[in-house]
Structure formats: C-alpha cells, structure tokens
Length: 83
Image (tube, rainbow, N blue to C red):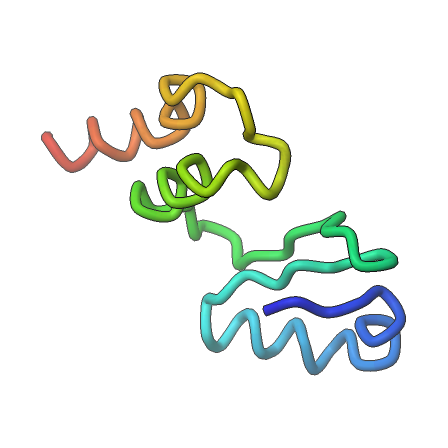
C-alpha cells in the first residue's frame, strides 16, 4: 500500500492499524518517490518477495545487488525451518 507523507500525517493511526491487521507493508512516498517502509514487527520478507523485487529491477535500490546479498537475511529463517 502506498501513501504520501501528507496523507500519512493526517491519518497515521488509521494506517498503522491497517498494517497491524493485514500484515501488508505501508510504503511512504515523498513527491512520488518511495522513502519509507512500515511493516509489523516480526514479519520478515518472504523469499518470493525478495526475489520479485530483485528480478523487477530493484524499485528500492536493489538494482545491481548480488542475489546472495539479498538472500542473506533469509538464511537464518531457512536454517530454522530445517531444524
């Protein structure tokens, strides 16, 4: 879900509640540019989300980043599943 800084300021609690209820991250924009991401604590990105961002060309600064670097945060999650 995308929201501008101005709209976020006006309805911040409403947006925060929606993020908590749905688990869907909130992307905050400034003059059309994505600048912040708000997501519930404990919700890590799924493998599919990380790879989709990578394959789409980044969108949030991941263009040209090695796939291994993108997957590093998921390594712990995978190790826990294998235990």
